Image (cartoon, rainbow, N blue to C red; front, side):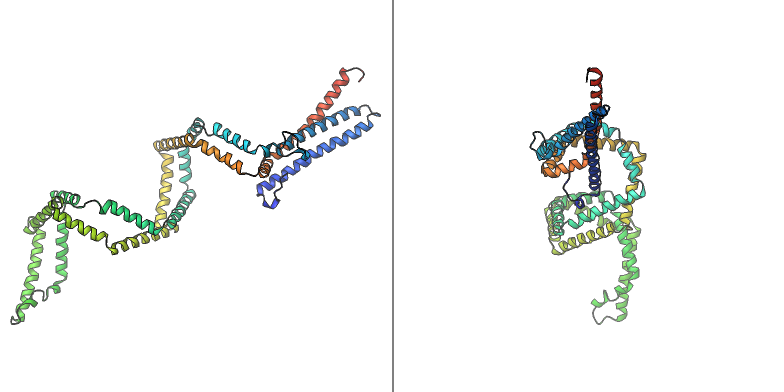
Length: 425
């Protein structure tokens, strides 16, 4: 009988223990009943010969009950505490039982053909899709995924992330030379006239600014004139410069072949060529790049950007009403819908799951099965006995009860046949 206090058992184990105790009481009651019947029949059979049949049945029932009690008890402990060979089988052979169970699972369950057959007969993708496209399930997946993502973000070391970003930036941005690829890129832009839109935008922006900021030209040139020049001339000079600037910008906007545009085209073409072939220009760009990335301010901005992004992600992931959670929920539902309606996707997912499972079983089935063996080896023998007895002990008590009944019937049959066959008995 398990010795673990009732309060320490789980509710399921408590129910199993009550059922085990009840069946033990019934089996013992049947043995006691047969013993009482045997005593009474043995005592009175001289006066009533028919009680001999009752005595034989009771005697067979006692033998069957005692034999099965011994067999069941010997599985878990030594009957009556006696050192009888081949008893207390489970505690004495616990490790061997664990190895045998692990080998059985490995051979009969963790076998590639078994796993493949089962998975091939199961519409995994369709079932998963039907489950995912239901709103409560999609919300649960989104919530659990968000919780995992928040946990990962909180577990990340900010210093480690900044160092990683810095290493990646240095490897992929700082160390490679920018001049040749930038020059080739700019050359393609100039050749395809893709830069003209940028020039148009710049001219439009300058024109708009000039119209809105005429006062900015007041004194721009006139303050440099000699003091003896009349004030009226000062005003005239400033207005002339302002209007000429507007006329110049308007001319650039209106004329696609304006000399300023041609000058810009020529400058960009020379810059593209110098970036690819002129060592001085390339060196200046590399120095500017190094100064930029080595600046403490840039590092501080990168750290601030990471902290801002991290905190924003955590806040959005934790808020069920955020747009991020909403888009994630919609994506999960769409995945579920596609898994249900897209037969080609179903086949791909089912094939991938089947192949992955078979690969894992083939490669790691011994390691998986060893979990059973190692777990049983770590168990205390008494604890192992208790666990197994709680799981199967109630059914084993039926063996004792059946042994009592079968023994009684066998005893009665033997006695009756003996009287019928052997003369004088």
